[in-house]
Image (tube, rainbow over all chains, first blue to last red; front, top):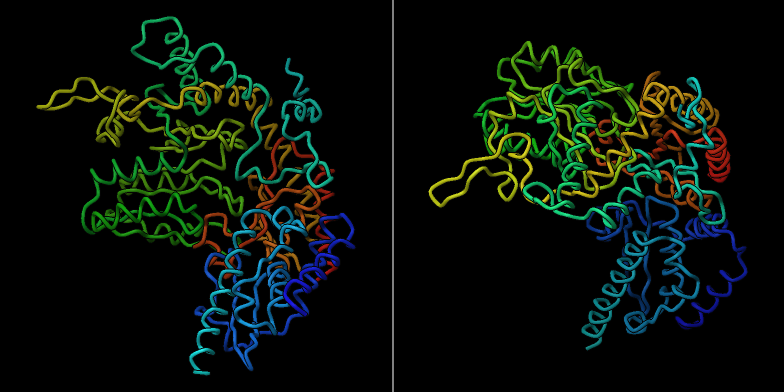
Length: 145
Length: 412
């Protein structure tokens, strides 16, 4: 699926949730349980994302031109939030990640849901993922040349 | 007779009516505000005093000869007298208005510290200080080559007084400790600390930020040299604080900041400084908020601090008892007499997540390190969930907190 197709599925899923803030938070926390665990050796300070109030470790790799992110956090809500980004970005071309317009954030009312501090942290996650994609994309280009 | 209290029983409905901000829904639930150690809500008397000042009396104080300036000056100075009485200070000139507790501590660290500290001297603080009672001392100790020594905190969240006695020597020049801990609620044995410090020849500053809304703090009885506190943690406006200092020490100290108000005469060949308290009040002060602060003092006095403590202590005991029934909860400083602060963690859940889930139920708590990172490190944690109560909180609100935590716990 394309980035936008996955975003549309996520928007649909959130629409079916009850209008209850607590249930939505629990739902996000549950999503975090489903992402693949980051390897213990990668839970190091060098892989921490700057600008997040909670700890978020992020690594990335590219294989056959497709990007894979691994992430973890010390808080379940943050882990759930990053799992949404992983679901959207994993398996995509680096260029598509860099150019992605993440409209699902507004559509599911993310900023109101998580508050300004966590929104800033979420912004830092996206920025870091796009930076990784940019780097991986340029490495791929060099290698193929 | 006040309608906020009858005999020694608080009239909770009447008290809550005084606080317009409490009467609202948050995320579909009535607000239960348990973040009072960060800042309290404000009674209508404080809010209307602010409005009234700007609508009727707005003028710069001191030196004005017109009616509005006279009125504003009289109201401003009457807050000073109210505070003098509130803490039983010998003289009104010993009450200095600041921006808050942090500025009061910075003033003493900078002015007194610069005058009396020398290479090799000691300043003692405790392991449960707020960053604002750590960093100013680190700065001045670095500048003067003095040592900053720390009173250890026990596993129960209390100060280790035996260690304190060992730290205290003739080299100790200043002891600066918190009266009641913002992160734990512990009420420290400051009378003993002051006595021991004075015997060793050291000055004592008390950080009273968390104590003033809950405890009777009598500076004459305590015999402390300085007491710093903030209005906004005791129902007053933000941006106002008080530094009490004994006259003879304040007179010896050089000014902290220069500007208007604090001078007697200025010329390019030299400046003479104003008398106390103005020597330490450079620039136009926060007039409106100082005036409104008097109403906050009046609110506390109307109920009485003994009555406030008794009521809040019942809330604290109920919360403590109930929290202990939830598995995986660990309470820090689970000791008898505290200001109404309960700091805890839940196994398997990060405090941030719990704070957000509680907010979804209209319950406001604080999560994190509470500006006491060394204390969190002492307990080997990143942070806690802190519920801090005030006179307007109810037993029903605490029951809601417990139910919400039980639901969260069942999901871990």
